[in-house]
Amino acid sequence: MSLFTENLPMTIVIKKGMPDEKKYQGIFRQIIASAITIFFPVDSNVIPLNESIHINYYAKQYLFEFETKILQLENDILIVEKPINVIRSRQRISKRIKINIPVQFTVWTKEGNYQGEITNLSSVGCRMMSPLQLMKEELVSIHCDLEIAGHQLQFVTQGFVVWNSAKKEGNDWFLHGINFTTIDEDKANYIDKLIDEIYDHNPNYNENVSYKAEHNHFLKNIDGADKNSLSSRYHAALDHLSKSKYDDAEKQFNEIWRDSFSGDEGGYKEKSLLELQKIYLRQRRYLDAIYVGLDFIKNFSRSEKLKELIYNIAKAYEGMGNLEKAIDYFGKVENLQPNDQFSEEARKRIKILT
Image 1: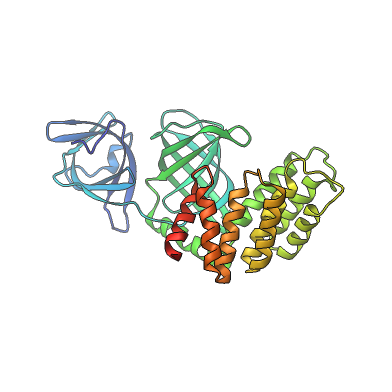
Image 2: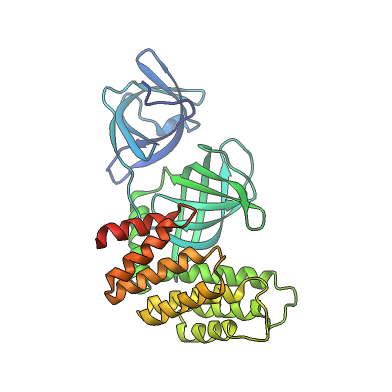
């Protein structure tokens, strides 16, 4: 039974599909004869002995599920019949939304409560920052009491760590990817519906949240910075973007870029040109997006952002219907190192346009 690996997180589902369906978390231990043992620290009163239950688990982007019967629960070890068939299906696809909201969580292998911050949420999982580094496949219980775009969202779910960052992210916290395993189906559907409603109302919601987070981080670390400095003005422009005030943001970015009395310490003129180009693309002002991109190439030819600017020039030409120029600039992107997401997207566009 190579489908099972040691310490594999498993979800035990009782009365699946019924109004009183319940989900519990367990950890695969071993196969003995015709049975499977699972670490399951749950009160035995919740377990219907000799009745059918469902067990599912995730492995390599797939969801595996099987039906079985409980044989015994003793000393936190659940023993179930070895399944005859295991069904494999793709993981549920769900839209994600950016947020920056504190949460509390506990860890199966540790005592006490820990503080974290969810930065990205869907109905199947989240990205969570924490001062505690969690290991891959470690089990957690997350207590969420969130407000997203004016909507309240409360739920408790267990989950397991799919990946963790090799480096610390902001405020010396670690970043983790977590799959939810025991979230209520109605709550998961509500999250999907909520995200759809937010995107319908504001398609740029994720970008706005990112701008707001960067602006707030700047305010926390401003330490008496000059309000007329490029950094202060740049982050004020980001605040305008977070509120979809594109005209105010455009004016601010243009003033930063054309400020002949300041150098570009911190790269704020460079960043302002990139944000200007994004505004023009969003507003379908394709010629303006191209001119800004050409200004960027002329002044910042060694920038790390150069590839993104050239990609945006290609998108602008495509938007104008000038496919020959678009393919030419997508080709420039494809040939620039390193090979990254812009390279991959450029290859896709060239294939579609030729």
